[in-house]
Length: 182
Image (cartoon, rainbow, N blue to C red; front, side, top):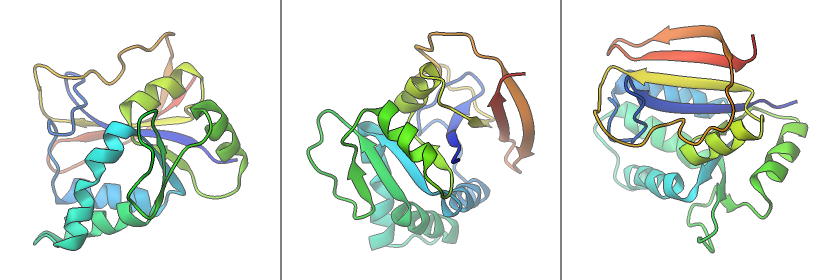
């Protein structure tokens, strides 16, 4: 059975705005490897549209190899987009979900293959409320943003997690791998 993994960056104070963190070579390399070892990534409309930035890197490569490698990884991974407003997607490796998040994820979990990653805050919250997250990978950036969107806003139930492992980056970011339960 495939695992559903919520993978997200956040600041020390819990801000999950994509502009608040530190995206350096090592972070890009980590997420490139993550995507290359994943089967599918789930996005909401907002994050899907933000990730479109990486298509511009494919068209006009960066001088940073790690950014180009990440752009290639994000381009090739299958994406399922959950949106009530989008009528079509403009990425060849993306499709719009035609079922509810719960139905789609339950079916994906039953399929064989690589793990299912969730890269949108809203979807992580919905899946946590449905008890469908098997692992959280939180990259805590060494930044206090002071304001912004909280990653775990609107969680309805208290959930206890068990720390499985950690990874420390040169820039001071720490990746925490959690699974639900004690």
